[in-house]
Length: 305
Image 1 (cartoon, rainbow, N blue to C red):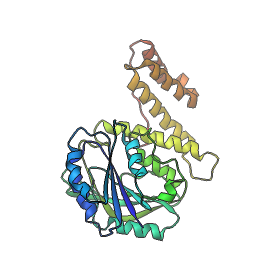
Image 2 (cartoon, one colour):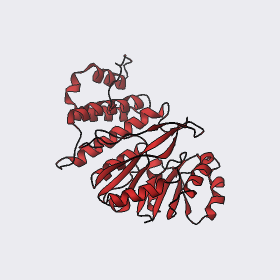
Image 3 (cartoon, rainbow, N blue to C red):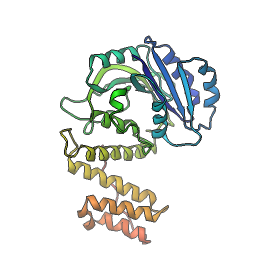
Image 4 (cartoon, helix red, strand yellow):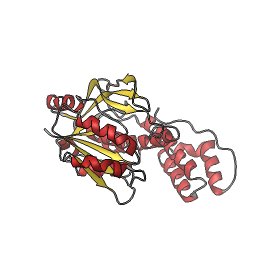
């Protein structure tokens, strides 16, 4: 079986040699490394050029910046492996990662998605701890979403889904996991097989966390409607609507001083799901601010945390 490692890179050039070295040291040798570059403005391409002499490594370059969802899709579309693993451009793998995951997929023929424990590392890739988050028995990722992991899946399962969504700039992996869960079983390997770098410029750091959380809610929302009228475990409607309030009101606040038309659209999208909000102080304070009255807006609370 061939293993494809797919990478979406944007300005992570300084980390790529370590990533490539970790793949080249794999004890399982039937692999390919597909790196899609989303118009990096650093020296990523120059750094990659010497490594492209290895026929197992392939680079695809976007002609314009399109975001993480599209970039992972580009890498996926150019891969040929039976098993696919997602690797962050600033992360790395221990030597036995591919061999263990190939065996896991062979053993679990009905599993569409298999993920692992990880090493949590500092900026310099020194191991700080191990994170292990197995999915509880009889539970779904829609209620117990895992964090970063070595995420692997079968190509045959991926082809049964709509795949990576270009609409997702963040949480694109979580969106895909939920789709994969809908076409097969989810399994967990309780062995750290991934070095996750705590990168200060990473997607989940500082202000980026809130943006990632909003995309996480969108992934849950999309899965909820896909799963209606099926036997697949779904999120409780009240919990979903509570999260949607946070999602849409966050969008209103984001666009409030940038695009009032978008603000009003998101405000009334929320009202579509939560009609009772028309009676709340938060709804009316947001509406009045959109109109032009500068009044205090109550603190927004909620989400899926």
